[in-house]
Image 1 (tube, rainbow, N blue to C red):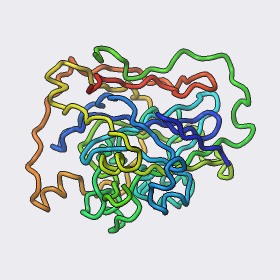
Image 2: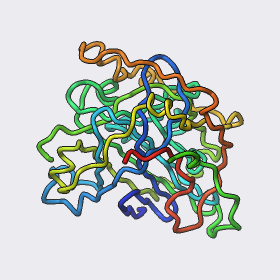
Image 3: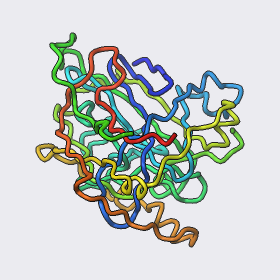
Length: 338
């Protein structure tokens, strides 16, 4: 099994892989497909084992962490991996695979592909909707039918994010790092001036342009016996304060304010890369806006016009870090909200 190390800003699984959880702008769910919004800094990642006397007992059953999010706040996952020896990575939200819509317990599968390959997959911003589009990850409380889990399974009992990482089989890739390639592109830092509370899961938000790439190596490249897994619980601000005694980071600015200040969004030049088809169980997920409409609780979101002059075009490159570095790609960064 691969070691899991929970750090303040990331989770490391094995010798070369790490994932951080980036705060970001929540885009409107208005029928448009938006560019990729920026990262507004990594969410703190805390180890459940350091707070065992203050977290729900069920959290202690697996290697687990927790992150704080406000209701209706969005995030994206930033992956770090070595191009000379990549990893296969499964991501589930509320026990539902974010690529295939299958149960998280399905194991590695090629048809339909239910994992991503890192560092080829630089980021994941939401569930697979197909045709080069994902539906943004948006934090919502369990029990109201807003989450991906509720749409796919009809239940809301798991919540959070589940990540399983697989090493390649011996001999498929080098055992030692070759000379370093050029640094990978990112969304660069240009102009970036408690247990009793309701648990949180991830719902489906607005659409954005992002492909989920097919595995270029084939499923036989991965060793199902060499894996590591972490469960990342999502807590709201009241839970976070109760568990840690600290206030969570302030909520980020909204998308319209960001555009009004002329700050960058991002697109990738990745036309040569394929796209994993989305299954019906994910394309049929009710979005947060659709659930709002059913409940009659929130007015429709105003669209945001993002001028092309604000969309930074980045080349796709799977270059990565030297061993021991925590990130394979520079974060796509935006202005801090404090």
